[in-house]
Length: 176
Image (cartoon, rainbow, N blue to C red; front, side, top):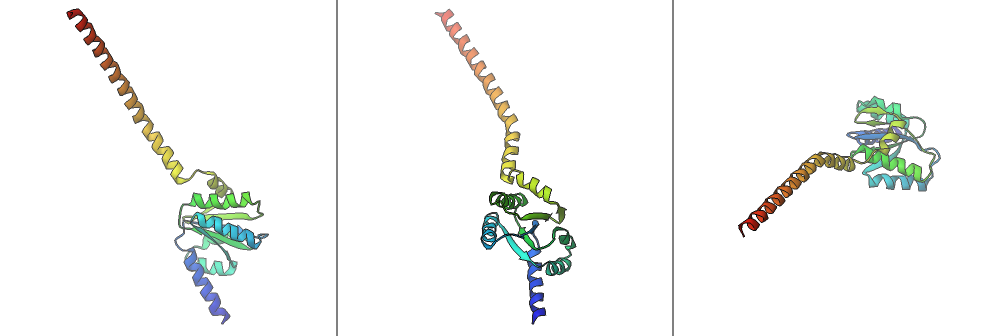
């Protein structure tokens, strides 16, 4: 009976870990139920989830899905943040919640698209602007030269039209 329950938990963990863009390992020691619920709520807003896992079952599930490097982001009581969406938003949501609530929770590391990332890099990632902000800055930078060209051409045309208008006025005054 106990073995079948653990087998089911391992299978559930396997499906939980598959196809995530980011998996962040955390040490949740010292968190109370209210903090844990608040964390889950904050992560849900950025399309992520938080789950407390047993390290031994996690190791078996990781081995079954050929993701043995998950063991590098696990140490002690482990909670995993997983998401299929943008890693920056997830890292920012986790870091912001930890800092805003002054939690003693530690980020152990992460897997981003299969690559190991340490806690300092997650902190750096959390400080990056979102994908939308980066794209809008890029588009603004790409758009600036064309806007400058349009301004220069517009000013040149305005000067040309003014010059022609002044010349027309001079010719009319001569013909009078």
